[in-house]
Amino acid sequence: MKIASIALAFLLAAPCLAPAEEAPLAPFRAEYVALRNGDALGTTTLALSDNRDGTWTLRSETRGTSGLAKLAGIHIVETSRFRWHDGRPEAVEYSYRQDSAIKSRTRHASFDNTGVEVEEGGQTFRYAIVPGLIDRHVVTLAIATDLKRHAQAFDYKVAVKDRVEDMRYERGGNENVEVPAGTFDTVLMRRVGEPGTDRKRVARSWFAEKLGWLPVVIEQSEKKGDTITLKLAASPQR
Image 1 (cartoon, helix red, strand yellow):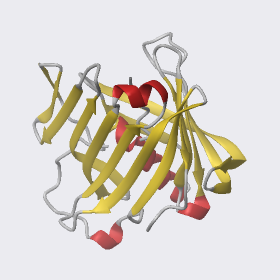
Image 2 (spheres, helix red, strand yellow):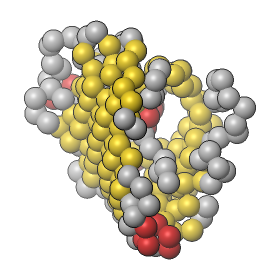
Image 3 (cartoon, rainbow, N blue to C red):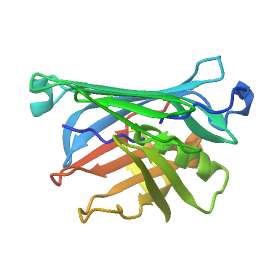
């Protein structure tokens, strides 16, 4: 089972480290309820922290607490270490681990100025690095920072298993959204197409300026047609 990665990690470029006060987003910890096709699945914790060494960490942890996800003991941890450069994230390291009674799955990506190395399923993939590279996990942060600076374009270079993928998002307008944490005025952001595939997969997120552009809803369809949704459960901790 693949949980939507709401939303970093793959670039080791400049040796100088940006001071913490230049970070466009503040540290936070937020709890979400996770749903699959509208049915309760579990809980997800999303946390952004300053490592005090010029790098930051985005960590998400999902636990199955209902239905088949509970029976299977679903536990997913996704961690991205990155730094800020010109107000946008750049990757340093990434890891993903999914454990359950059915199977386990891991992915690890490391970076240096010669390229990207990804290890998954007993295989190793290497490819060239590009400026501003991020992973799927950190796309949410990248969108939030671009919303904060009133960007007109939302285009990202995203490292996947064996290549760099171009991802483009568009602003879908303002919407009033109700979640367990309350009702918020939000901006809808949605992914535009998926080059190279005819699958109709959807990725949408609703961001609240009142919460420092934290997403209050993250929604993504999966290969088999299921939809995974995260909804903010309580006011985030700062």
